[in-house]
Length: 315
Image (tube, rainbow, N blue to C red; front, top):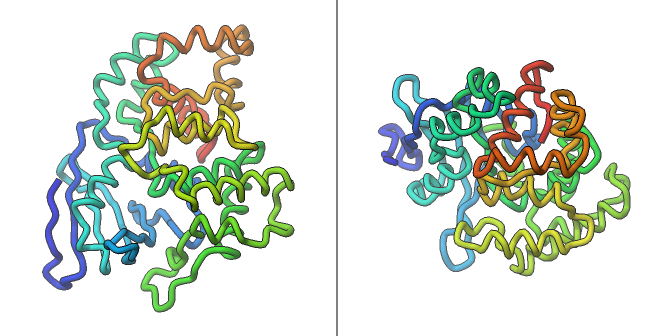
C-alpha cells in the first residue's frame, strides 16, 4: 500500500492498494451498485464513491469523500481521499483492503471450489470474484435487517428513506450523489419510523440493534473483535436470524467460510442442480466440501443468477 498527496491540492491523497490477480472489478462494482444507499454512495464511471468520516482522536471525526477505481495497468485499486480524512490515508487504506477483499488468494479459492463439478464452470467464468465487504458494519446490518423477505431493490428504497429521516445532509458537498451521511446508531435508534415501509417487528428489531451499537456493546467495525462473540451477540437479538448473521459474517466480519445457506436464491440455485438440495441437511452436507471458502461459493451462485438476469440478484 502506498499513499501520496495530489500535487494540485494538499487535502487530496491517492492510495495504491495492491491485490493478487485475478480481480473482477466490474462484478465488485456491480454488486455495490445494486445495493448502493441513495445519497450516501454511488457507482459511476468505473468507480465507487461515497462520503466518509474517520476518527480523529478525542471523540472527534473528520469528514471527506472517498473514490475507488481500478488502476488501468497495475494490479491495484486506487483510492482517492478528499478533505480532512486524507491525513488518515494509511489507516483508511487498511480498512479499504478489507472492504474490497484485496487479500484474498484468488488462485487458491478457484482451485479449491473448482474441484466441485458444480463450481468448475462458475469459477472459470469469474475467476477473480471477491466477497464485497462494507465501509461500515453498522450500515450493513441495517441493510440486512431491512432486506429480510424483500427484494434487493426494495431494501435499497427503504434504506434511502432511513437516510433522509435520520441521516445528515452535507452542506456545500462537491458530489451531489454522496451528500448524505448515513444515520448514526443513536440517531437511527431515536428516529420516527412511522410509515417507513417495514413491519412493526422489524422496525423494533432495527432500532433495538441500533441502541446496542450506540451503547458500544457491538463493535462491528473493530477488526480485532472476536468473531464468535459478535455472531452470538447478533443471533441473540430479536429479529436477527441465522441468515442475517451469516451475511454479516461474510461482508463485515470477513469470514471466508460464512455460509448463508438459508438464502432463498442460493437454495433455488442449488435445488435446480439437485432436487435433494432442497433439504437443509443435504445442503449442509454438500457445502462441507466447499470449506474454508463457503462465502465465495455463495458469491459465485449469486453471481451466476446476476449474470443471467443482467443485474444484482442475491445478497
